[in-house]
Image: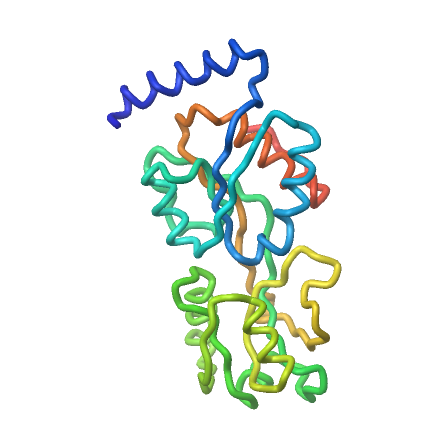
Length: 231
């Protein structure tokens, strides 16, 4: 749709919501990266549904690049993704928090520094379609750290399981959980200071469901005790 036509549709949908007497009634289609699916997202959705019982949602997982493409195509209403290099025209980005990248290794690993561990064990790379994987690769190149890549997977669970059974080490985001890795693993901050990746939401500025998206964002922030800053 052209911007003018999209705005007309958005206004009509807002009027319809208001006529029903509840601006937070409807369906929100959410895309989310893997670390959030087993971290902050389930708790945020439970809280969202408790506070707004007339609001329904659909969730799909994926890599940031894929979710952004689906968002631009109108197949999603909002995406919980890694911070994009550039925000697409007509879209809004609000960072929620930062995830620290850590080196994970078997619990009996004797190394205490990221470079020492990464160069002493086979390396398990996270899928290169993930934006954060490029962040890791760039940092390794900057520090001239050469790793011996033996495996590549697209889920944190697969990577951490292989590490647990002694097949190598990896660099992954540390999820927002009291126990971010279900199996006992050694974790060491990656970088000095640690490399961080921004996590937040991306959505179309003129979206008819902006009130629903804002409510979703507020629930995400509340799960970490953050206060939303007014623009």
